[in-house]
Length: 497
Image 1 (cartoon, rainbow, N blue to C red):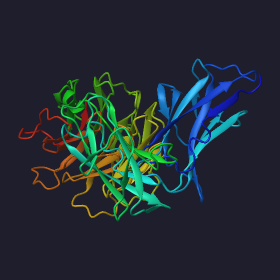
Image 2 (cartoon, helix red, strand yellow):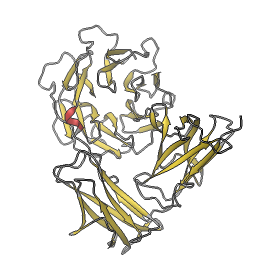
Image 3 (cartoon, rainbow, N blue to C red):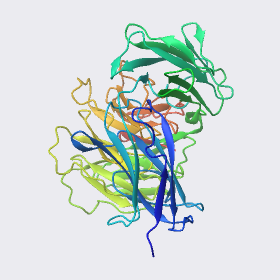
Image 4 (cartoon, rainbow, N blue to C red):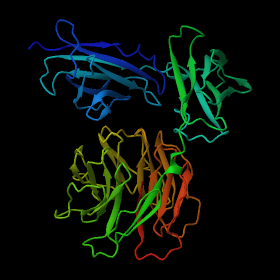
């Protein structure tokens, strides 16, 4: 058979440097035969890679394509299979990061096979010093701005990568139905671009105010551009409304002896409390449907409850260092275990993307978190260092920061574009699009913090202490705790249901 024909539009994705922070553009890949007829349900292998002056580098932006095995899926550095729709298309949405670099090129490659393909095509985007940079971007995590609250936003007008004092920018604001407002000083922003002049630092300060009450969905958009009409460059910042997911959830606490304590909407599905264990429990993870959970012991033994399925364990493996945590895949059909030396053990549909098992560690590994699509994971250590694997990107770490207490837990945001680290004193460190909602860092605790868990939309989180005390922040609702109850063994972690 003759090889398929690939047509991609647009190519490139946008003119060099035309995209601002957190902007997205959608490209269509159309697969046809040599006569121009669309080829439906045809596999295409897609990948996303970056390049800079010194050669290949991690991609600065991110891309999601339709036609994945279970729906839209993020692209990674290695080619993975996607399938065309009835019109022979795959839609690919590329997004720039909140802080775009001043150089480098991200390339999306399409090929007809995983190796030695007969047909290939590429499109991409080249970064240049952005003329407009919003901070923070987005304005806040979905649902993260309370009703009637104001969030400050700084727009920096730049030239050649440097702030441009007195630079002119045209700003506009598009509100979702029932959405909020935005102002520069006393001047409200509206749908028509209006000129503003940057201060001596090249900055324009914008106040975004959420409505009261807030709508259940939709996005408010602040746009900056270089002209009132027909702009050559632009950038956008946004705030997305979301229901207070934390109030509809619940959580489980797990103790060292395998005892399980359930609160809120989290149902009790059983425990190992009272059962002799070969090794103490060290972690737990919830099935995505909330109807079951896994527990893992320091020897790698895995225990299943509810609809959690058993995919294997390290219980019979001679471990160099004990297991310290686990994370499930996006569909609940697999899980990873991580050891104190950074070794990774994967089961079910959990793929192996690398580990720190043979790397000399400066501090003990304390846990891990997986990306939302299951295409990668992060490993965190007690000194605040973070290592990324697969499609997980590094957004920073607390290594080198003077810590009042060691890091004891980590969690990913709902987008996978950020994460939190929490210390034993309840101090929180947020990276990427992870927002700070509060901490116990300044409180006198009866017992140390041992873990954390985020709400479904990432607009809040819970901490749990070894005495079973629970602390809730953002839209994380408090459903109860074991604080003040005499425990047989201390609590060591939690999961959200």
